[in-house]
Length: 115
Image (cartoon, rainbow, N blue to C red; front, side, top):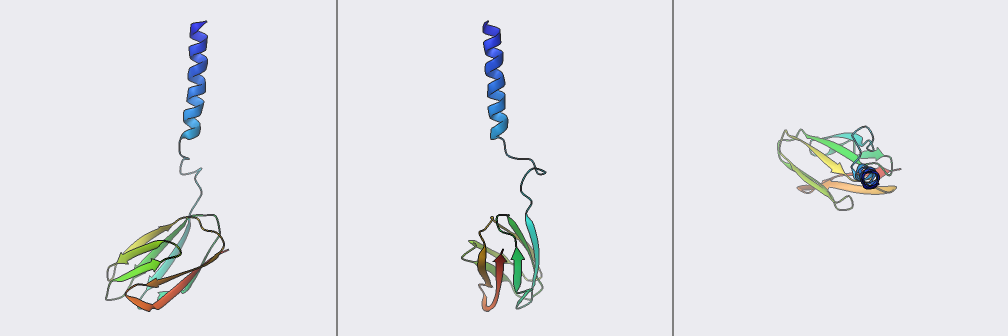
């Protein structure tokens, strides 16, 4: 009797632990990847992504000076050295327009449109 209770308890505990584990890469929600180049201005200036999915923005700074990708609404900022590259991970967002800019050159602006 004691052995069957222990076995049942262990089975229930194993199911609870498995349910609490994070999803594997194949099961996790796939991020939307967006590539942007910068040389005094962002190219493209208008980015699009679906709502409810994480976003990975890959920025390549072709300029001779460092730049800082910043978005207050996306809660993202990253300094990218001259001729350097960076990856900016953004959490899933609701539909809307989210502006971003270069903190060192605020005339350089763009928008991420979440649909």
